[in-house]
Amino acid sequence: MQGSSRWAWLGLLLVAFVVPGPALAQPAPPAGTPAEITVQNETDLTLTYLYIDPAGARRGEDRLGQDTVAPATTYRARLGRQAGCSFDVTAIWQDRTEEVRRAVDLCATPRLVFGDPAMPTLDVAVGNNSDTVLRELYASTSGTSGAWGPDRLGSEVIPANGAFRMRIRTRDCTFDIRAVFADDREEVKARVDLCAERGVVFDRSGIPRPESRSLVLANRHLATVAQVYVSSSSDADWGPDRLGAELLPTGEETTLALEVECRVDIRILFPGGGIEERRAVDICAAPRLVLTPGWVAASAPDAAGPSAGTPEPGETAGVLSLRNAGPLPIVEIYAFPPGEPRGTDRLGADILPVGEVLDLEAPDGDACLADVVAVFRDGREVTHSGLDLCKAGEIEIR
Image (cartoon, rainbow, N blue to C red; front, side, top):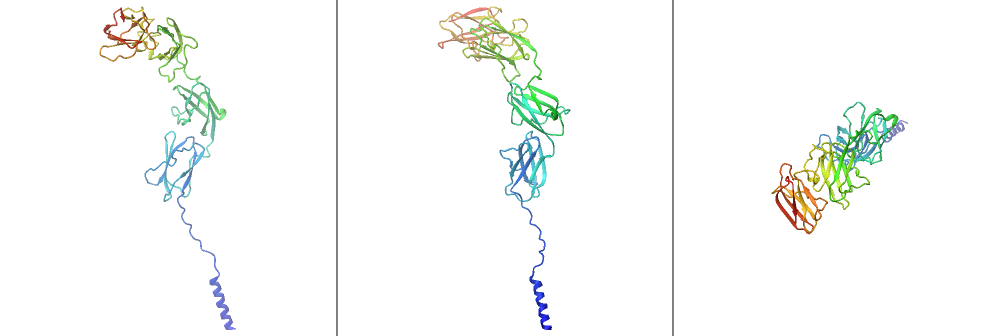
């Protein structure tokens, strides 16, 4: 019996070594750097550049490449074969502001969230009820004078009679909204309750209108004027044809009612396609302008009298006249100080028919002497040197 007990005890001891007990807990291996992360944009601005570099390293490549991250969207940014978990992050927004985060642990949380996802969002309809492109759009909390913030359109525009959805993350309701059109005119809607209205329309009715002015145009060209454009020199567009369906025949004049600044640019078109332009004409100083060959090169008009502008034939003493006494029409006439370049063709889109007369102004208001070159239709040139253009008289060109 004692021998059997000894063997039984040994068997139990062997079983105790063979039967496995509970496994001991082992530490988890460290997480590796993620191959890519999620970028979540919960701001009002488009994310244009994103830099993710090992902590303390110099700024490397833009992780967005040719892409951007629009508001309320996400983006998968690849990190490549990076070692470690700690990164410096730099985000650059459409208004060029930067947000920098140092030593971000992307192994623990492979997601970068910009902005506050819990922030309420206003979705506002913006309408452009005008015939001009709306180029820039700004929304500022009322009372923050001068702090308009970023252009809400980014790289977009609102076309004429078009619309745009503007998203603003905010807990405010009352905003000042500013629209800038393609001609640089601005319209502002003040203290708009976007929580109640959820929309705003721009129609340019809030843009201050220039004072109404009159301009008399007298056509002393040898051809009918088909179209006339007059716009403030600060405008980026010529605007409408001021003659409308009418024409301005030679020898006649018309009065234009204009809402423009004093200094204007003027463009006239002839039926054959010729165009003449003159810039920075002060119509407050000279409310009457005579259109003659060479008016585009004339010096600043004298505003002393009612007929300020280029003098008409026979109106002003001391003007030299040229008569075409040749066999063909004259197609070009140049008058310029001796020794200087020819400058602008005084006839422009006109011709000087056989037997017709053209009055010439001095090329410089203080200098009367000029060389005059006339070019006939067959290309022949006739030159008269040292003419006194301030002395009344008539010269025949043959």
